[in-house]
Length: 207
Length: 207
DNA sequence: AATTGTGAACCTCTTCACAGCT
DNA sequence: AGCTGTGAAGAGGTTCACAATT
Image (cartoon, rainbow over all chains, first blue to last red; front, side, top):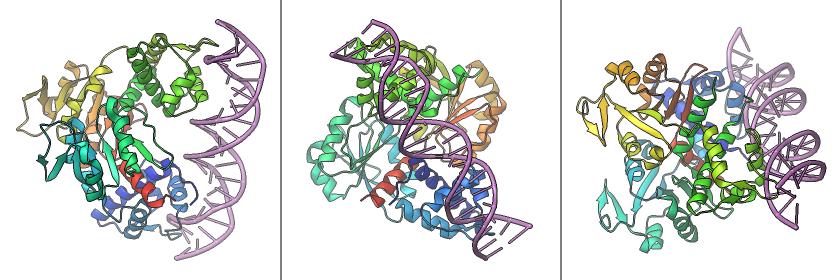
């Protein structure tokens, strides 16, 4: 497949959410102009993004919401559930467990991994907590495909190496550090301080 | 000032963190190659980013860590504390209150705003919870400059409009929706589902 | 009449490559 | 000799503008 840019994928996620909302409101058809307006971008951008994957609209009419949502869901791989391991059960980890948005999109947290001995073998919201020692068995048994890292910077790389060794190819990293992984592994970073510092820059430098 | 790209600002935040870590390890001097390696980018990118703001290095030698950290801190506006209001005290809000990274970089959550009557007038980790009714007084009294929105999609735009009306120019938005704001207001989005869906796309379409 | 799909133009960001300092 | 700073080249992403279609 031709290389698709990150921004295109992120926008497809937004279109998907837009279509969900439209369907909730019983809207059947939508134009690239409307999708664009809702997401604060241009209609050409919407059409170009979709054009990488096929032609989904009808000239003169727009897109069928149900169909387009379905197509984008297929493109993004949202037609199946994903088994997720949450590593680190501090502030952020705890918030993610109860984050409805993940569940709704089919990301299922199957297991929590944390080395605090007080937490070991407990169950939170129906999800068992293990320590790292039997990680290979845990990953295997739960068919884990995605790892969310919500651990301190100091241990993030070491843990990543372990999960990579056991075949994990996809990470969502909340630690404010750039992880080193092989070429066939993808890390997405979620770094809240960076966004806040972007605001700080903006407030400081606007005139 | 010449328009600086978002990615440059995000990288400056990363360089800043890199320098903090180097200083903790008593490193005094660093080259663009080292900064680049730690952050998985090229050295030309590091030098180019810095060049928008001045010349901070010594040819043949590299950068003085202390000085460069100081300069970047100044550029990003981290030389002062920022007064922040947290709006919404659900899972995510609760996690942010205890998120050390924010405090460390000078972002101080002064007040929590939540409309749940059970939470009203309580105090969490030393931070008072108010409802939205006296919002203008609260923003004023606490000199709030940044609003973190951790509320459901349905109420996000309405709340944003209120804060914009009372002069807030900078938002960190956790609701998965694109907010409409005037040109002189900046919204940064933190959308964890989008990153997960990026992983889903990668796993579905690789090879 | 309305709206898509898309090549071409445009713009922005990244990398190259090397002169210029230390 | 080593490393920065930067103009120029290259790569990549966005917008334009219009033919094609309903």
